[in-house]
Image 1: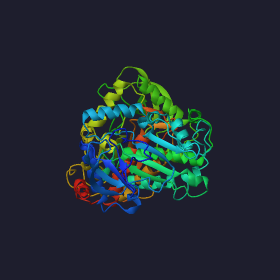
Image 2: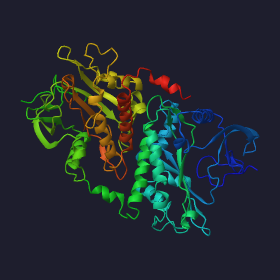
Image 3: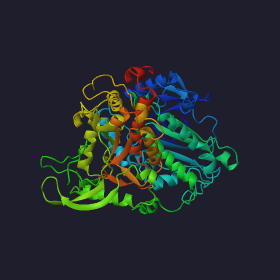
Length: 294
Length: 294
């Protein structure tokens, strides 16, 4: 009854005797509780957040629903292990296009251990995190029935310069099939996926307004998932564009200060999406447009 | 004719044979060009910015006017040295209250030297920069004719926790004289200095809108000055609240990405100012309000 999630694009993955999340047919997602403080911290966050009366529905909708914890057979065959029971975000989706974006130019909290800080700092400096305020952690783009998904190596996505990240975010909403991903993206679905009153940009702006105000949580090393159904877009229907926040093993208390690290990265992502919407067919390189100011 | 600026609260200061900026009576501020790449970089920025046709007046007003460079007698007696010639921001001010806020949780650019990065990173971690997204670099608060200025040690301002920073930003707009700064601040001038359609918050929001959009410059290690005249406020007149950006030795090209590091810190500062305006007499500690969410 439990199976490996078919649409995971980043994070630990089950299969081949490895420990990873599982899903069932009732729409629940079972995430193994990491044995160290990451597990207890993520559980602490979900427990706090799900019972926090100050979180209203227009914000809680961006988070997976939390159903507690449960002992289930771990995917690596190691027996019964505690799992977080969460909403399976891919329920109802047939061929979702998904991008996982790890937020913040800094993925470490000030109070983390020195060893952890040095490890994260090194990775932040080697990837897009430092220059862009976020990095692409994984992606799958649906092409069509014949070509299936375009799903590049996760590590190849993490350290792209701005213009390459923009190109990927254009490909994400283009009609190109997975076999012609090298062609110029046509941004055919930019307006219906990123744009509109319920589109991705609108959702990101709603999330931004919350981050400008909330001082309860700082979300280090967490990801925004952007999802939609290209199949629906191809049929001229609403493609169901949706954003979700995931991965809360490094959330800490905000202590009266906004999460300026997450917010800065979010504003940077918003700028990328806005530019694609404003000028989907811009072909000139970003470098040449910047040279004009000097 | 040249003299030491009377209202400098941070940065290198002239006097006692040291090299520092000078002012003249015509309203010009002479800043020694630092001999290393900091000097050439700051000159490069002013030259680029002052000739950038994409910078409109509603943004350029936040920057000191640039009048080129000039060889003048250096304040340390070392003879003729090149200086940046800038607008003297204190012209027309009688007894200005001034706070210098170094922006960004990170004061170093990704492409800086390893030695410089390690030096800045250490300081960012030891001060408020990392947790708050900015740090107080210096302050003077006018009391009244008898008590003069309250001007605490600059180093004592840099590593304050959130609730102390908030207290200082309250004292900044209170009627307390410099001899009763230990008393609870009354925030008597919060509404007239921070609030209103031309007040500090309004100016910060105008600056924020620009930072959400501009991808030309990244402003590492630069400061926002907030200034006003308490004397005018005491007389019920417009206290002339004004913000200015200064110190551009570490500005780099934005290369198509917004300055998410500066912007995050700016949003954090805006949140502090907003809270003081909304609830100037809030006495409960920030910690207790946060505890409510767990």
